[in-house]
Structure formats: structure tokens, C-alpha cells
Length: 360
Image (tube, rainbow, N blue to C red; front, side, top):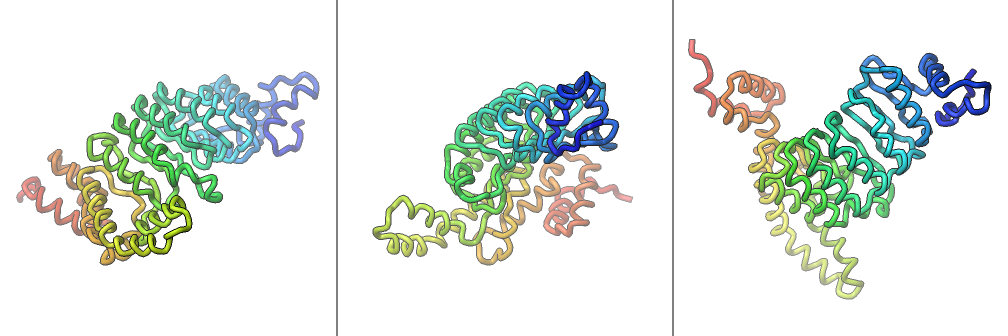
């Protein structure tokens, strides 16, 4: 006899007001009736999205599932439960050790909660994918994430971007060099993270951020990075960045300043293209930086063709496979390049691995 209520936490506290049901008994009923999705599906996913859960509800569900001996849970999705907040981040230690993916996006987590999460992740040896999108992170959070990346050697995918619910919510990601510097300091010592998404691709990339990551990746840090999302690059990238700087100049002389920057744009774009080309050339695993829009018209950007070339080779790990000299890897890479019509990669692989092809 469960109350009809959208708040799972209310369901779980029902035992305090009706008869002498224990919380374990109520959760058993919830599990058996399928209410609130408090049981993993056949894929091992515990889907608790948007259930209006509070800290108490999350704690009771996770603790009881563990006691009941569920051993097939691979993913826990708590996204969209905005009542979890900072205190709910403490619940991570209750997640079963079989779980490799956790999603706490849009859970109203701020700096205090993120610190709990990062402290937990420093020593965690099971979670390989962590999603924290759309939470209330600010500049202080950069240090916490950086420290976690420095010490964690298991995490492979980290998503901490925010969709732009207005520029105020997004300001630390877009304008603060401190944010990126704090993260890259930890990334310098990390060699297992493959995917890092700090900014959703509807926002423009800050050159300060790009320079920071470029320095780390080209100096041996983040050696496993394949996908780096720190913003969208668009045709007017440099000019837009300059317009943002206008706010710091006041209103006097703004028109003259914009005119001077416009004249410098081609040179700035050339410098930006060189930086990107060098980054993809030096980092053999990196193949994605949200450059789709920037590369729509490659003839408009100096060095765009070079950037495309290195991105294509890295997509199928052509250079790494050639260095390793493994025939099986060469065949797999060649098949992938052929299916994706990556002609530069096909040519590179055949030219540099011809000696491995059996002769009949």
C-alpha cells in the first residue's frame, strides 16, 4: 500500500506514518512493483533520473540495494534530481563497487558537494565515467577537479560542462582563466583520462583555455586524451574574444579599438590555426575538439587543412599503430579508415606499413 507520490523520498519515509513497516520492507515493495525504478534493468543500469529525490531518498535506496546483494549494477543515473544538492554528494560512498558509471548532472551541486565528490574519487578504483553537467560550479571547483585528476588513475571520462542557462550561470567557464589553469594543473599528472568536457559546445572557446591545455598536452600531460571539449570554435572566434575585452575598456574609444582588432584578425586567425595544428600533431591520441563549425569552410582558415590531416590520422590512431608495428592493429585501423572514407589515413597506413602486408 504505497502512497501515490512523485517524491521518492516521501515514499521512503512512508513507514514512519503507517503501521510498522521498515524502510527495507518499503524499498522491497518499491523494487518489486517497479515504482521509482529502484531496481537495475537488464543492462545493469539503475535509472533514478528526475525522481525528485532528496539526500535521504538516495541514501536509503543505495544502502538497501547494497544490503540486498545486487551485483549486476554497472551504472547509476541520478541526474535531474535537483533536491540532492551538496549534501547528496556524500552518497557516492554507498554506490556498489560494481558501478563504473555515475551521472549526477543537474543535481544542484555546488563547491561543497564537488569537494566531497573529488575527495571520494581520489581513491576510487571502480568509476571510469563521471558526469557532473549543469551543476553550480565556480572558480573554487577548478582546484578540486585538478587535485582529483592528479591522484585518480582510473577515471576515463569526465563531463563537467554546463548548458548556458544565461551567461551569468556560465561566466566562470567562459571568462575565467583560473578555472582552466586549476584543471590543467592536475591534468599535467594524469595519463588515463580519455574524454574531458569542460564547456558545452554552444559556447565559444576562450584562447586562454586553449593555450593552457595546449601547454599541458604538448608537454606530456593528459597523454591519453582523445576528446577535449572546452568550447566551440567559430569563424569569428578571435574577433568575438576581442569584443569581450571591450567591456574592460569602458565606452571611450571602443569604436577605434574594434577597428584596430578587425585589421589584426587575419594574423590572429593564422596564429590560432598554427596552435591547433601543432596540438593535433604532437598529441597522437587527440582527435576531437569540437572544431566542426570552424572546419566547415577550411579555405577561410590558414592551416585548416593541416588540422584536418592530423585529426584524421589520430581518429584511427594511424601513427601510434605504425610505431607499435602490430599487424592486427594495422588491419583494424585500415578497416576503420576505409569505412569512414579517411583517405589520408588510408594512404598513411599503407605507405608506412607496407612491409607488414603478407606476400603471397
